[in-house]
Image (cartoon, rainbow, N blue to C red):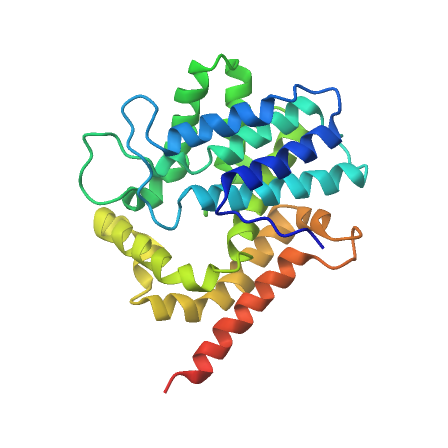
Length: 284
């Protein structure tokens, strides 16, 4: 089982990522992790260009840290299992940047005073890829590396056409699938996931108001309670098929031992689903 890490504490997550990075690549640039975490904090704090601090309450910086921690653990497990194509230091670094910037599409410009960044729910994946390009270009990353990061971020779209993403190679595709897997599992396994569902509903509702008739699936939930009731079916009918088929069961690399040992992320999600079920049985 993984040691507990408080994802409300960016320093704690950063330290875990740094330890994993140094364990995987002992001769790496040990300042890399601190540097890119500082970039992410800078952006989410509204200290880049004319962007405001993040004001989406569900897709906040902790949400990003949950996915980041999960991705790091998954890649460590995959490397330990000697999976191919082999993880390289450079590819790990690009994946880390991609997960740290995968939800920057919720950031608003300073002149944008209407609502919160949650209104961009339907377009946040494209906006995140564009933001990553804008920021990382200022940090000297090559166009090829930025393209790889953009491709990985695109994998997190709910309706992403994975076949249409122009991955450069098989490893880049695997990292994109790993990122999307971690994005789903990191949030749904969180100890306070159930408590945060009303906040997620508020984000969906704001996005539906913002996008009107184009809001699609976001408008189908009439209340936070309905969203919670539908979470078990969302898990069974969307997330599980997605991570098993589309994302090639990369979540198995979170199992200890791989591949058939206990998977603490899946166990935590099952606990959350059971909590939701108990809440339903208590309703009058």
